[in-house]
Length: 133
Image 1 (tube, rainbow, N blue to C red):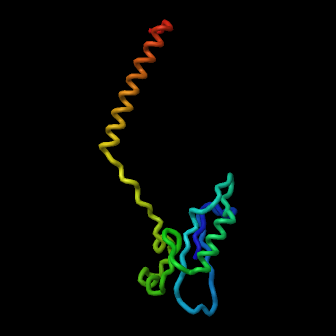
Image 2: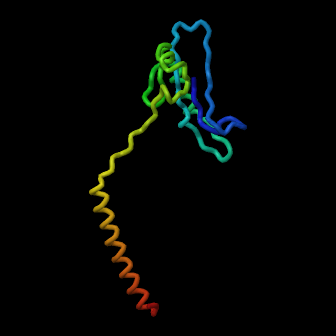
Image 3: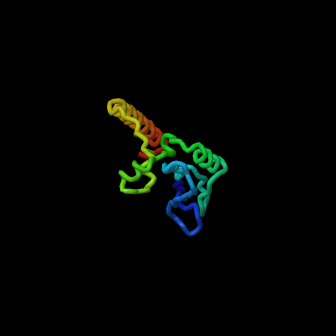
């Protein structure tokens, strides 16, 4: 199962999933690929670049889990998820946000406020020289 980006197919503004079926497959595992973030954003229509297609094909052929991109789920895992085939259920694309140092931010804000006050004072001096008081 391959999750594609939104607005990839004409007349379809939502992300679509492509399901590939193989007869007489040796295992009952299902490969989930989240290719929804790899595309070229064009004006009216998104499109897959050759590099995006190559990545999808290589992942499909390898049939292995790739962090933040693909997951090889067993039949039992799918069964435990009530046969829900929603790709985000299997492929975790969550990115942790960078931790913000509040103290450093407060220091930076104070410095910027000081610089702003200095610039305002300098600007007032220029305006006074020009006769605008």
